[in-house]
Image (cartoon, rainbow over all chains, first blue to last red):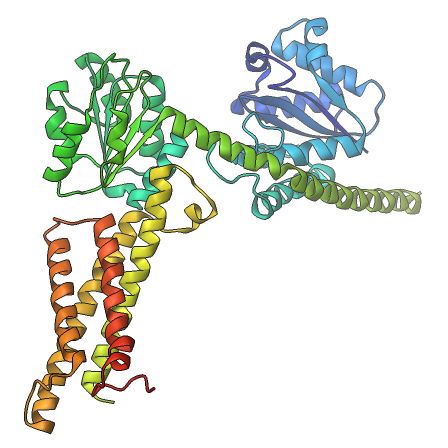
Length: 352
Length: 148
């Protein structure tokens, strides 16, 4: 039995191509039987995410299997083979296939280095294939070890440490101020894209109450509906400042929305209850010197980006260590697989 | 051991906890304000939690100190016939008690919060240390915890 991999990812193909090749969950089990009949694969698992489409397979022989697999994908995506083939990577050497999957599962091949989501996606891809009866001894062994490798790399190295987007960094900072966010009141001022994203992250982390304030009521209502937030009129800003714990400003206003004086007054009125302000506006929405006020924690886009960069740098440093673990796990797998193959051959001989 | 000694010692322990929470608060706050998130940043608890621990410790310490000091005065009254002996530790304890009462009330009424409470609980604990160790060394005292 041979191990094969054909696929494309965010580096080898643009999103237009990736989305055409992507497999929907519902069509997977039909696809497995077609792969068996049309391509001659014995085992298959399809990993289809927004950044990659990969088919891992076990085939009894290598004769023309890769070509058949390419043609199969070209039919599936409805793209000329000549246009698709250069974007695909195909590996038939066991070492390369295994190394690739283990790196993918560990987040080393991801757009955001060390991201955690991919491990779930690999797990889901494997479980779907297993449920459809598309995996056997080879892919069961391979994917179980891939999941194990992903977990080991994440727990033993700093590859997944720190936050890698402005939104998640903002959430982390807020949590370091308030601890549990379930009682925090969050106000989003303005309709900027990153502002909305930050609101979304806070909502995901269970922020207690969300409010949105925008120049046009229509936009507020839209946002409010999407995140189950309360729309508040722009005129209510001073009153809101007394109630909220986290304020995100994301407007393109040419003048400061919040001045030091107003904030200083608000802090006295709110009995110095800490206030976290995330200023995502460029030009800035909050007078920078306000950050010096007691119990106000002010972060602007550059502060957040610097933290993102810092975390990314830390992850880069964990790369070597992660590679070592992966290489070792690849070794283990190949040794296991070779002994399995030998046993299978012995069985065949004995049967004969 | 006597109620007086135990309560006093426990109150010092509570003030030590408030002191520790205060120090951690200042470290964490400094990192947040300067946006330098080092190794400590991830390990330290949130500011609000530290603030809460600080307040609980001060409340507990204050209560224990009140019991400790009162029982001391009663004991002295029974033993020596006068409740106030003029021992330096008595003056310091009253000072300490008043200090923590003010701090507790300010924090309770939410006039003070965060950084300043943290700083004051650190200052308060230096007075505790002085009361506990220093006083006996400077002037002869009836409370010989540390012998020369």
